[in-house]
Length: 152
Image (cartoon, rainbow, N blue to C red; front, side, top):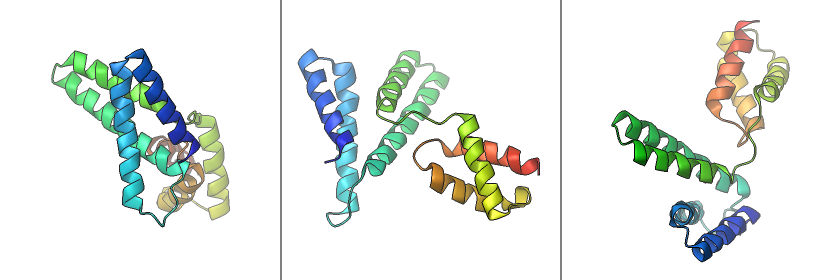
């Protein structure tokens, strides 16, 4: 069990003691999703904190998309609940990088790969995402890389 999984477990216990169903439900859902991911990966493969972060990011993304759909459908209270759950789950993720840090990594990758323009987007994105894995969203990286490549 990773350190992050231990933290999730202790937060579940604390929420149970507080009788805080608003936190307990998404925490239990998170634990179940992590357990399922561990099973899917198999006994032989190691399960790291990066794997747990991937599960959390997927769940946060699902909650944000659900909140948008509920808002569009007029179910604002349900949208607020989904947003609150996304924020709770996001608290387990490392602090996201700011745009300057992402641009710094992208510039280094651009110079290392010898990228000459927007046609090299795939090569730069692949190397950038490998280096930034788990620390930021791919869409933010794509936007910054596209701006940098367009300026070449």
